[in-house]
Length: 95
Image (cartoon, rainbow, N blue to C red):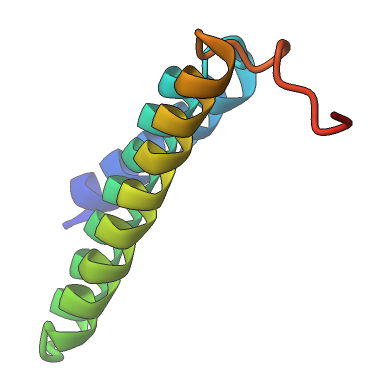
């Protein structure tokens, strides 16, 4: 069980590292956020299985993360239609 905890910590840290280092394209940022969500889902499953609880909360979390992913993709499509690319630096909120 200890290997699962170490792998979940590694997944979380690597997702945060990719999010912090690759801030050029919005798509890469969204993918790293989804990777962090998957690692959090894995952490919740480990925690619930350790305490032998039901997995109902994990389904709610999975539903909310899917909604967050759909919202991120809608923002990506809107940004590509408005600006022509997904570079974060070209997006200005002052216009």
